[in-house]
Length: 446
Image 1: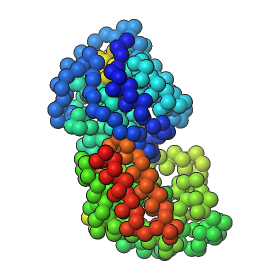
Image 2: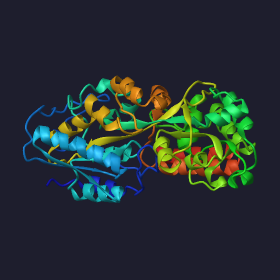
Image 3: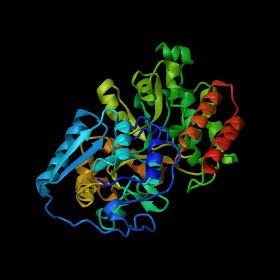
Image 4: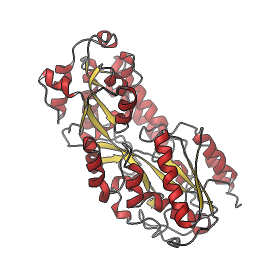
């Protein structure tokens, strides 16, 4: 077993442990270096996705080759589906591939990487990618290893590109949508909002009481949404603003456009037309929606299975997020299948990754769930099986990556704390922007 350099060990030991979730987003980890050791497939890479490493042999027998796929456990149905896909690969190639879900995924993965004994293939959240790539823990995608890479939505390939190098193909993705109660909108005579102005008017018309009455179940808010960057950030995009520039090298939130976006969303809460889930005794906005405490919520395509499980009688529909002054904006939340730089069987690992993420594998994995295939070529077929979720797929065309640079999670924590303060009335938008800018500059310039 090859040993990592001391630099990589130190970098990986510096990673902050935080729970990963498909599509939800989480804090980042601490900053690391830029070593890019790639084990037996070492070679330079140029532009995103243009690796010059040797491609693995296609269609060869892998008789007796053991391959471990690590990830976090999802629902029984999803675990079964992945196991069936992996079993199909083993049957076709002769490999002994197996999915090994880890109860404490980040802890287990960090230990495996630092010990020099990593799993062959493992989940990488887009928010985690910069940390692992900077630490040299991931192998770049070898040229020809992934079938038809141009078929993958550009925003999703970009999500797994770091310093111009493409590291892994996405297994699926999620976006945000406006989920609403059709009966509530009809009763209030409200059309599905498509702009900020219409959203504000709809939220006002649909609100039937204050937070206390809503929490008691005797009234309903027009809108419920978490007070956090993974929701409010979409409104920044819709006004032509962002926390950082496109390549995450400079803070850009101190602009009139960003200030206007934050003030717009904050105003919905301050006027009583939107509520935080916690303010109405709900764990998240999906729960508030299911309990009829909100007529509209901004959530992702993870909401439908939650409704089916917890509120099976709740009727709902999904629309694209309303457009802002600068147009539409959204997030692409995604997870990829990464291959370790020190993988014991790199060629076999990439064959398995391609099997899971090519057109056939992408559709097979997502056909029974609400996550969406990362390939444009199968979108129409997927939508035909999930027509009620088409608005989520549409979001891929104008989504931005969910990810920053190592260490940026602390900056988002400052931003989220500031948003809470604005909603609660003890901070100003200018303070939020100033604090976030200062925190971000400390990371980007550090």
